[in-house]
Amino acid sequence: MSYDKVNTKLIHGGIPMDEYTGAVNVPVYLTSTFKQDGLGVRRRGYEYARTGNPTREALEALIAELDGGLAGFAFSSGLAAIDTVLSLFKEGDEILTSENVYGGTFRILDQVFSHFGIKGRLAHTEDPARFAAEISDQTKAVLIESPANPLMEITDIRTISDIAHEKGLTVIVDNTFMTPYLQKPIELGADIVVYSATKYLAGHSDLVAGLVVVTTEELKERVAFLQNSKGAVLPPFDSWLLIRGIKTLGVRLDRHVANAEKIAAWLDENSDVKTVYYPGLKNSAGYEINKKQARNGGAMMSFELTEDHDIAVFFEQLRLIMLAESLGGVESLICHPASMTHASIPKEIREKVGITDQLIRLSPGIEDVDDIIADLDQAIWKSRK
Ligand SMILES: *Cc1c(COP(=O)(O)O)cnc(C)c1O
Image (cartoon, helix red, strand yellow):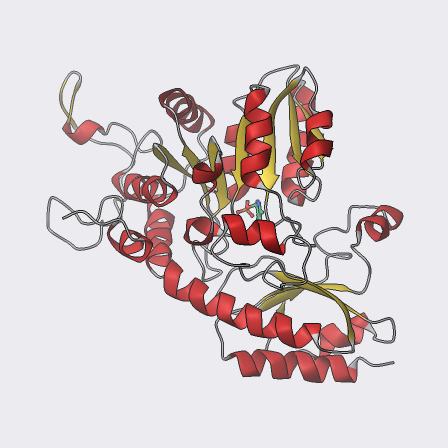
């Protein structure tokens, strides 16, 4: 039977059962190596578990199918996935990234790949004309995040892909915030999609993982080679947990987004709140473009409390929502970009780009939304100076 609807794919996609036993879940294959039946004779192609493991393979087939790509690859973290993709490039190459690219992506380009002659440069992917002018002769790729963190800027993925492809660049999209349930970058022109699966895909704040999806035979071969050569593979148990998480991605995200929409609307009407950054709000800058390329505004948002609120008191007073890095888990998490995720950026620059000391980033969980709003309400009230 064939099927093409996403909620069915989430559950039956990839390798849906164990051929050997009929188990409805692919088991955790805890083995480092595989017996060969003779020289060069391998059952189902496996030889050594860094190169290939059946549990990991089920996950890799699943993410490739969900994203509409040719092949998937699983890594020990989102950054290991990004590291592997950036290793496709060589000395003298330049990679442009969205201006508010994930801090770890900026850091690995700025402080690791720079040592090997691969240069990262921040570009304005949210402004196509500006982006076109930023491409140089050395530019070989663009890495897009949409929405980008923490101000949730939206990039028109199709327009930027078209401009990039005209100049022969590889288009990489970090789709962590949206997942293939809400946004499918390959349909919009991306050549490679990367994920921190630690976030919504796993969804329970219980594992660290990364995924890559590619679209061509050449990229499939080169990423498989790099995955095996660099070796930062996702272990079998974590692969199994991630498959388990992905099965409920649709129902979880439906609730995450419904909660986010209610919370954003509530914040938007609240006089204690100066600005709300949420692409699902009709008055947000990227609303129209996001609506064109994604199912909805996703669940991540940021907001700024007015100056007559003490930010430290606000965080101290929260009772339900937990102060923590990361996002995308079933529990609501909140953070303070200026002192946490974006602390390494000097204050003047932070203020200039809008990451003020009053800015708060919220990852609404799937709790009852009234409880989340009540917690925000009482903490906002108590933080008034
Ligand atoms: C968390 C995150 C990463 C890094 O992933 P890890 O799993 O923490 O290594 C990369 N990109 C984005 C957008 C992220 O949110």
